[in-house]
View 1 (cartoon, rainbow, N blue to C red):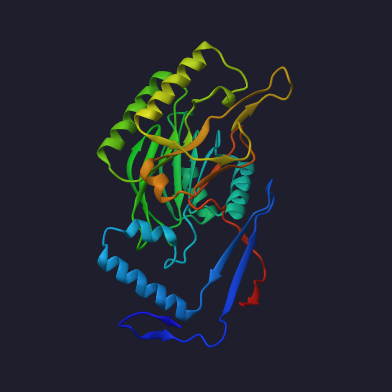
View 2 (tube, rainbow, N blue to C red; view 1 turned 90 degrees about the vertical axis):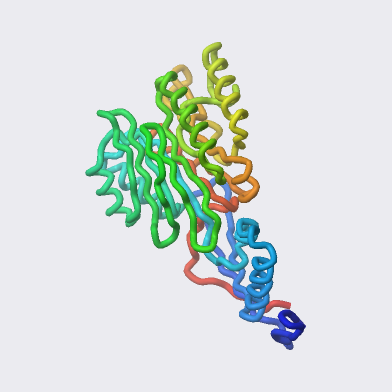
Length: 327
């Protein structure tokens, strides 16, 4: 007997309810993954809805915590992808991008170091069916940050654009908003110092949960480089100090340890972890299962990085779900 609301029962479960489980698999991954969505019977959903409404009436400031359970909102987790493309003009690049989007289905994705301006950005929006988009154009053949999203799935409000980052507010109906900054740090160390300062000021002005992801063009630890010297160690120490000063957390990743590589022989091979995702403490507590996946590098020396807020990559639906009768 499930009883709630004025002391009266909602429904007497005389026989076990049928439970539907829909399964997905991820193609072409190093480790196979599975995501299972449990479709609850109507009676149980009614009970959960009543409990949710009662909780919200008693604790109106608990929105983010309740949203984190995804009990009422049956929408999939918000996923973001950032990719240093080292140019976005070729037909081969567009084909590779479309395949990435087909396999991983990010709701928001950013292309950095695009090396070009707006005409190609509009072409990509049309070709990929991501109708929401904004950009910072490249300066000559340097830089460029393009951001795309699906307005039917997620609300994105760009709030600050800079040559080295775009910051935006992300939300969905019924969920607390949070900030996302897509990063492309300059190769020039002095300009990177400007970026660290700008981001620190952004964090001071805006007191919301915050995710930062992209190409930081810096490393934090010795294992993140195939080779080191006194200068790279000094820069890593400075970068770590900035991370600690802003109380940022590193989001756990899977995949290759280094996200950039170049050279085809032992003598010429170099690799570094330049691309990463970090978050504020508040974002990390809200999305405590968040993970980053370093995807295979294609059409670029950089790996795309995929950030999922619940630790599961978006998965391709099988042709048919399977069912079982609950005991």
